[in-house]
Image (cartoon, rainbow over all chains, first blue to last red):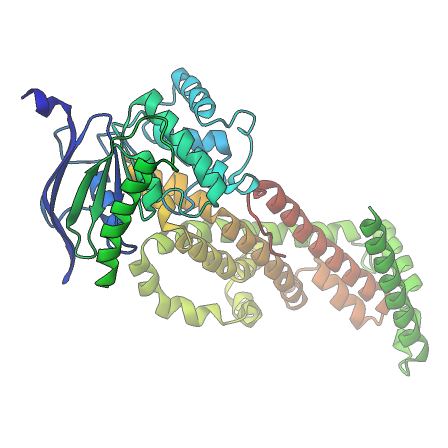
Amino acid sequence: MNENVNVKVSIKNVSKAFSKLQVIDNISFDVVEGQFVCIVGPSGCGKTTFLKMVAGLEAPSSGSILVDGFPPNPKNRNIGFVFQEESLLPWRNVYENIRFGLEIRSNKNRKSDSIIEEMIKLVGLNGFEKYYPNQISGGMNKRVAIARALAVDPSILLMDEPFGDLDAQTRWIMHKELKSIHEKLKKTIIFVTHNVEEAVYLGDLVLVFSKRPIKIREVIPIELSEPRDKLSEQFIKYREMAIGLLREELVGI
Amino acid sequence: MAHRYRTLLLGTITFSIFLLIWQLVIMFSPTVFLKDAGPIDSILALVKLATKGDVEGISLFDHTVASVLRVLAGFSAACLTAIPLGILMGLRSEIYEGAKPVLEPLRFIPPIAWIPLAILLLLGFSRYVFLIWLGAFFPILVNTIVGIKAVKPTLIEVAKVFGAKKRQIVSKIVVPSSLPEVVAGMRIGLGIGWMCIVAAEMIAPEVTGLGKLILKSAQLFQIDVVIAGMIVIGILGLIMNETFLIFERRMFKWRREIRV
């Protein structure tokens, strides 16, 4: 029973098909509260679909998804989602974008101002409140998206290849910052990527998905001392193991 | 800054050449009517129109106000009908598809073709309002529909993830995101409305309006007055368009590109 208390997300026998196309084939796993889970899989295998089901934007064809013990429904549960593509509202400045979720949740009280200030500080965007998305860099856009997702104090944070379109240097900085945000806020995070190094650097747990229809190919608990060193022998060992699994999947395509 | 002076210089040169050609056409024209219609004559006629009025004593100001009021009334009517309808049709494609067999053929009837019918069926001010409405309605409607349909699906998902209701998605995502298209449609609609008013005033019996002024003056062979009236029509159209453009640039500074 004690174990159950800690389970934040429970995926049981979940399958998903779009008419005849089977996308996800009977996957099950649990995510413990505060855990940072990274999912890697071949591009286009249906990882985004999976994440949208966890967010409650899509329904599974069969099986059950429980977040905090209930089927996910954005209408009555705070869920943070950071999208792969540009997702800021271009007509709102940084401050107003971060406020967006609070407005929808009609939390527009005095407290919301201090929450937004806090989020701006958290992602290091002080001084950029009045800027519009097209006036700031891609990395800053992602920071705003993360701050917007976190502002509603979500029970889980779902991230769909959020750093895919950033240059290597900016991505590296974002990894470090996301890691420190996770340490500070202890949010449960499910992070989807096709970049294995990213997954091993960020995750407490790395799930390797197979090609479509998705099955869980491997579950790799990452046991590395913090701060993680991308050049350490152990890091490379984990990385090569995951790359090897992924490559086997890609060969079959 | 250097760029600015260059543009100013180029503009002055072009404008001077234009005036020169105008003067040359007048000087070498075989028609006797045109001899008093050079640039200077026309400016003088404009001053006279503004101070003393036309042959009937109706001042330029009255003509202008009459035309502008008609256009603004018709344009407002077009905005009030086309924008809500466009939002509705953009959101629900079945309404758009259903209305298409009626809308599409109507869209390609020039407003000017409606003038004879408008003269028979309507009276006074309402006739102009109807014609301007016709001219401005379709560009605003079409642009609104396009703007609504062009909303990025990701932005709608952003709202859904926060648990937004349908109403919130429309008011906080769909409408603001389509606003630049809507305002561009309004600018085009106003331009078309302005062109229609001049034509409508020429044919309708009312004595005021810039269209009536230039037709009446042409019938009296006062070509300088005709040109003076044309200048006013052109300048007013330009002012309306520029006002809209300034407004668009201000309001939509978050947009990367502003189309002209």
